[in-house]
Image 1 (cartoon, rainbow, N blue to C red):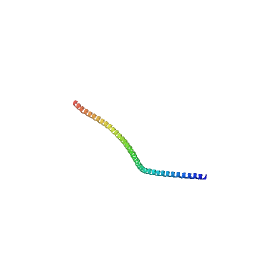
Image 2: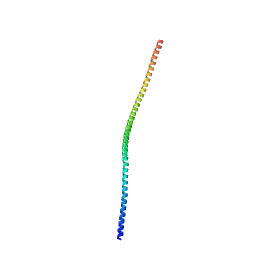
Image 3: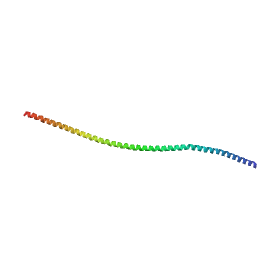
Length: 140
């Protein structure tokens, strides 16, 4: 019985060693494949990372340009606001000047009418006195 037990132990140990050797060979192949996968991935990732860095730089430049454009738009809107205030002030000044011109033209019309009436009245008085004296002299 001891020999059978000893035979079973030796058989089990031999089977374990054989299984261990097979697993180690499979594991060695898996490690080789894993190393190859890592090398391939590394080769493909490097250009991708370089391209990604370039894209990020371009994106940074793009956002900087957008910020500059936004500042220019703000400056432009401030300028437009200033121009509109200047136009409003100018239109108020034009309105005041037109009111003054309107008042002056009304005053000038009144003065012209008054002068016209005065000239007419003085001409009538002159003519009346001129013709009135001739008539008066002829009667005498």
